[in-house]
Amino acid sequence: QIVERITRTAIALDKGNIAVNTAFELRLLRCAPPSCSYIILKDLCLAVRGISLRVLTASQISLSNGHYPSNYSEIAEALDDCAELLRKNEPVGEHERDHDDDTENLTNDGTNILRDPEDPFLLKPMIKHLKKVIVIWLDEIGPADRSTTKYCSEQSRKTMKLNALPWLIKIIGCFIPLFFVIPKALLKLETWTKLFDPFSNHGAKAVWVIKFAVG
Picture 1 (tube, rainbow, N blue to C red):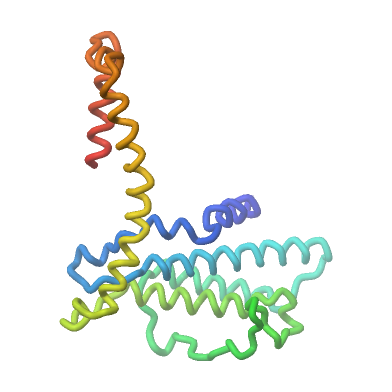
Picture 2: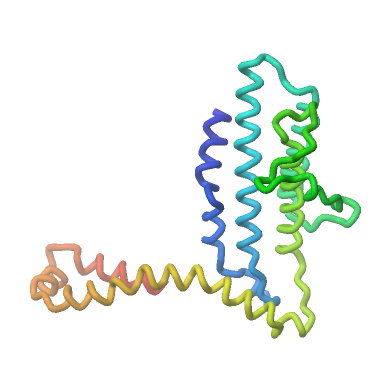
């Protein structure tokens, strides 16, 4: 059951595309400066997916070998700490932040050069990266800086464009074809006959489609 849940989650978070569906910036509703939080959420989705697949792979290999790393419980506690941060959904205090920079120990594909013999599956660097992304995400959805300069800055204008782009793509992809389909349908006598036929439900369908489109 656990393997199935991890697999389903990994498929849902593939490429982090699910985060783009949240591109509408909710912080605009509280009159806060715009922020492109869905990009950070996308990074978080990818980090969760990566660590999930790595843990799943490590557990299956360890099970087949009959040997688990000695620091297995430490890794489990670190993952539980990450989950607790997301459950609290509050910005992390300065004393809880990890300020270490391990980028000099990473190759181009993100693999740690300094392999820990107690961590053969390289879970520790991935957990550290996951925690950093969680901290950034919690900062992003936390209290906003409402200083006047934040509202009309160049950064806020760039953010608005980034937030609007996914929605413009969806609107163009969904509605432009309708401009070619609807005129053809309206010019057919058969369409109007079906629409006002009391023994069919085409009229009710048309009303529902209009309500759905307006919504």
